[in-house]
Image (cartoon, rainbow, N blue to C red; front, side):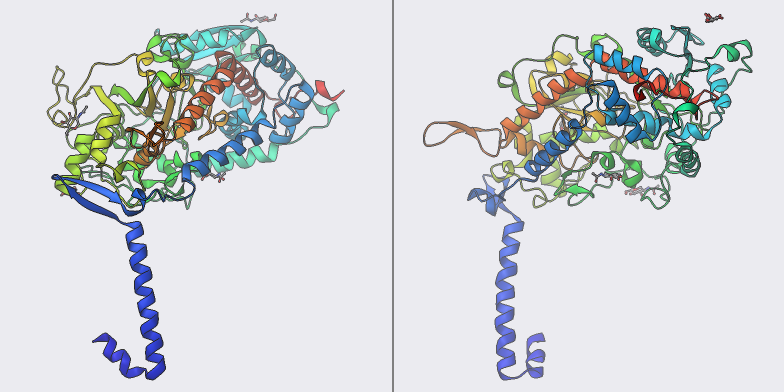
Length: 624
Ligand SMILES: *[C@@H]1O[C@H](CO)[C@@H](O)[C@H](O)[C@H]1NC(C)=O
Ligand SMILES: *[C@@H]1O[C@H](CO)[C@@H](O)[C@H](O)[C@H]1NC(C)=O
Ligand SMILES: *[C@@H]1O[C@H](CO)[C@@H](O)[C@H](O)[C@H]1NC(C)=O
Ligand SMILES: *[C@@H]1O[C@H](CO)[C@@H](O)[C@H](O)[C@H]1NC(C)=O
């Protein structure tokens, strides 16, 4: 009908040309269709999904992960080209990057770092400047008076560390211990400590912007004769300490408080909190935004809730944190992790300094040789992430991750509900081209390569036993596994709990490969390069199948004509290389000595910001 109408409008040769064109277009689009859509083949009742292009061995020449690994390698080399090995070049790199003289006692800091074989790249300390920057916009006297009068404080006076606390607290003891190991090289300081797990400071973006304007305005390489090279110290403050100080902490909806910390115009700034948490969360259908063909390309943006409003309804931090008590008021408070929009000052997490094997996995054990490991995925942990309840558990990240890699759950979703499960939605098979699913269904594959389970369901209200009426049907709890037992597996996913995940350092230092998703920032972020030292993952986890498929392939050992054993699609060498490079790197830049070096630099900068002479305080000992 449409054609005959068109025919009336054309005549003779024009019509012929049109028909030829349509025929070519038709053939071309069929080819495209076949190439990009999986075909469902029925074999023995189970639906086996196959890619037309997989069987023939014609995969795209370069896997996106190969490209990302290559790019990351170059980034790492660019970073390491900035390494400094003497005081003069370290001070020069400082002035170049920070726009100021280094803080007083920079020579002591440098000597300590060098004596402890630290790798010194100025960029490794970027987090310090991100965290402290806004305080250049607050009067020095105000910062130091508030700090001294807070309830939980770690202090240094005359080279000795001490603590003040309302009651004995682990975090206080551990951070005081860390501080005492470097106190003899430190100026006087008072360091208020956030003793909660959750990060608490949410200053509106517009305020921070004002503070940062003041910071930029104060940035200056002061002429040598004007430079003051000694801290004033806190003796005067001790003689006249002022009133006890506590902020007005408030509750409220965490997302509503947090999004105000996002830049105007960022995707989340004007998105109101979600209220209905039933069913699966929104998940990308297709590749996550800002990814490179489905895989994390920019680790900073992948971790940023300001860029991903969906995180407000798919991460426990925003669904319902265990406790929340936040302030909009900029005040110096130190803690182990935070969201990108939080304003805490980061210290290395207390559990990384602690020798407790629960966190460290036992200092000396990092797992055996790669070749001896089980080639699969291991995860054990609690159903934390916040307070999960009957009508919200489907929005918690750990729950989602475990179900998405549970082959049985995936099979049920595929067979009975078109890929939609209680707490996740599967992408179409044509999104990520998997080798494994050209051979078997996704669930069968996952069941053959994954051992992952909760050790407790953290039911609310707590029934007082192991069970949980609303999550029991979906999860089977298993006994915990010590970290060193987990290191017997090649692949170790790491997912946020109530805040950051405290085993990450242990995973990095192990001979296994961490696969990391998080929305939290830590002290070490600028010294770890994704795809070189660990594998980054999107917070929706839609890329997990692609990641596992790239590294593990089908997981089935086969023999080629010459009798060599191979696993189709696997990139075991690449996995081994990242695992071992990550381990080697962690042994160079995440040691306790590196935490000391970081904290010493942090405290020196902090002492300068608390000093009335801060605009002229500096180190010029290298300038002759
Ligand atoms: C630190 O040393 C100064 C000068 O030596 C002394 O006046 C002050 O009392 C000392 N403070 C502490 C807390 O020991
Ligand atoms: C919440 O969403 C679910 C499914 O998306 C819907 O069935 C339900 O009616 C909603 N509840 C409320 C209170 O709006
Ligand atoms: C990564 O994303 C951040 C935040 O969105 C942006 O500022 C930064 O420039 C990006 N980095 C690269 C290398 O593209
Ligand atoms: C995997 O999913 C099935 C089906 O929902 C469930 O019965 C089983 O307990 C889950 N396994 C684990 C380890 O949670």
